Structures are given as structure tokens and as C-alpha cells.
Amino acid sequence: MIFRQLFDRDSSTYTYLLADEDTREALLIDPVRDQLERDGQLLEELGLTLRWTLETHVHADHIAGSGVLRQRLGSRSVMSVHAGAECADVMVEDGEVIELGGVRIEARLTPGHTDGCASYVVHDAAMVFTGDALLIRGCGRTDFQQGSSETLYRSVTEKLFSLPEHYAVYPGHDYRGRTVSSIGEEKAYNPRLGRERPLEEFVAIMASLKLAPPAKIDEAVPANLACGMPQASEALPERGWAPLERRDGVAEVSASWTKAHVGEFRLVDVRSAEEFAEGHLEGAELVPLDTLEDASVSWDREAPIVVMCRSGKRSGRAAVLLEGNGFRRVASMAGGMLALEPASCG
Image 1: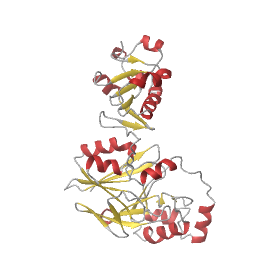
Image 2: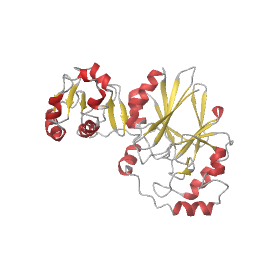
Image 3: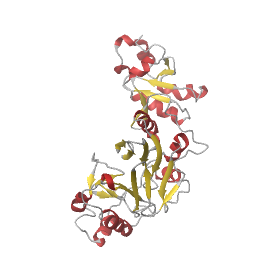
Image 4: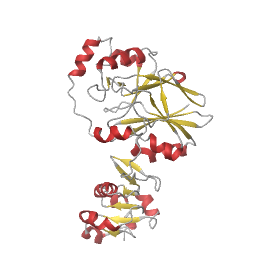
């Protein structure tokens, strides 16, 4: 079995790629819409065909990519029968099995963080993908979106802690740089649920957390009930026109790629006129950052644009501004002028 663990820094979300080595069929667990270019590129590089997308729940901290992947690649989306998302192609019951070539993935419904939480178990590989139900040394919160501490406790202790202790635990998030745990570790060291902590103590711990609501909950939950598909008024940025990477919410292309492909896109330098006069990349047009919004009103929103500056910071802000104004093919040149050799500048 082919396996990759991928990470979205903006939401600290893990996406998992699993594939059958013989049939080259693949699935993604919890794909993030902002990372579809990365995921699509990896599928292409590994020679894989995406068959399934599995959602562990209706997310409140990021927009899922399953709907767009279905539209672009023909994959089928899977969610719990209790998720409330009618957009899913398959609504799994507890114990149902998804087949991926010779790989079998068992769905175990693990509500409590939300009604629609599901974990996915690959017994042959001794792996379980727990979403937000069980995190490394923690668990999902239970104070919104149908949350129930009592239900989550039963889900973890009965559906997850009943697995063999050597099974690897791959969570939906981690905020401290940890990538994997095990059932045995969590039973021994999880401060909320481990060491056979009684239900009453767990409920008290969860009630005392007093967490702020997720920053994107008002946007993410409605979008994810529609499998992350953009609404008619929402222009989804296109990621396939250039070899993009997304860092801290900004789509970027390398300086070397930009230099090699000048003329294939609109190259916009957002530095000051003085900086531009001291040296610039041939083919660039000067549009200082504080004038960009007004200057771009008449630009073609379908035409590709690369924005650049001295170090990449101002161009990052420019790329976000342009995307927010409906431009679908925008990237910031990573590293800015500092990433180019002096001979590259006019």
C-alpha cells in the first residue's frame, strides 16, 4: 500500500493519501480545498487515479476539497450517514467497508465531536485515521456542532481503544508538530481519555476548556455541508496553470520558474518606483502595492498573473488581494528579487 501524510499549515489539518500499489487506485482522507493543486500534482507524479475522498466529519476550521475533486477527477465522496451532508456520494453506516483495489478500509462511526464523525481503519496495515475524535494526547472539542462529551467518550473507549494497541493513530490535526501515535500510547498517556479515566472526569475536563470558536466556522460549516463546492458567487482560484505551492494561505511559484516562463503570464512588480528603477526582472510592469487594487479593476480576471517584490512579503499580500477580487490564476514569486541572481535584473 502507498501511504502519504500531508499537512495544511493554515488549519493544522492532515490529509492522508492511500493507494493500492497494483491497481494504482487512490483515496484521500480529509482533503483541504486550498491544497488541491498539491494533492493533484502528487497523484499525477505517483501515477494514481483518485477513486474516493473520505471525510471524517463536517469540518469547522477549513473548507473540504471533496466536491471539487469529484468535479475535476471523478472521485466519489464518503461521509457518515449522520453527517447531514446530502452532497456525499456514499453515506456509510458503522462497520461498512470501502474497497480500494486490494485495500479494505472499515468505517467506524465515532460521534461526539460532531454527530457525523467517522474514523477509518485499515486492519491489514494496522492504521486508524481518527479525524477529530481522537487526537495525539487530546481529542476534539464538544462544545458546538452537536458536540457531546458523553458520546465522544463512548466512541473513543468502545470504538477506538478496542483496537489492538499497536495500531498507528493518524489524527485530523496536530498543533505541536506530532505526526502519529498509537492506540497503546493514547490509552496510556492521553490526559483526557487515557488510563481508564472515568466518564465523569472526562465530562468535567471538557466543560472546563472554555475555547474560542474556530475562526472559519461560519464559512466552513455551510460550505462543507455542500462538500466544499463553491457557490455561484464564489470564484474558486484555479491551481493548475503553474506549479504552485501554498504557504500560509498564499499561492507561490518559484523565482526560477518565473524567470524561465516570462511572457506566459502578466508579471507585476509591486515595489516602489525607486526600487523598480534600481533593477527589475525583464518583462515586469510596475504597479506599487498601494495602487494595485485600483489599477487591477480593468484587468482580465481569467488571465494568469505573477506578482513579485523584494522578498515575497508584499507580493504575498498582493496575491491574496487579487484572489479576493476574483482573479483565478494568481501567484506570488517566492523569495522575490532576493531569490534572483543579479544578472537576471534589468
